[in-house]
Image (cartoon, rainbow, N blue to C red):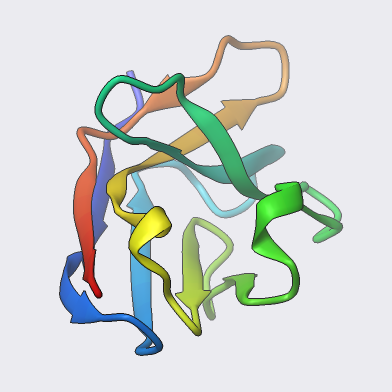
Length: 116
């Protein structure tokens, strides 16, 4: 089982920035994609951003260029830089890893709260 360690959440004001981090307990030589999802109270979980095994990226429509997903110096670390945060971005943010041939695995989440 893969362990995902998320960090970086917190309370910020609208317009400010936060960077989330996630470290996966996998070999950087493995083939996998990593992603960030979020879930607000009473809403479905939605994809925020994904970075593929070839470093291609995808973003949710609501991102509108405000967020950047990237890998760290080792492939098993991923960051989500979030700029121009809005109160609607308030949610629990979850890191996810999809290893080749396996089902996705999830972290326990980190809370992001944006005040107006």
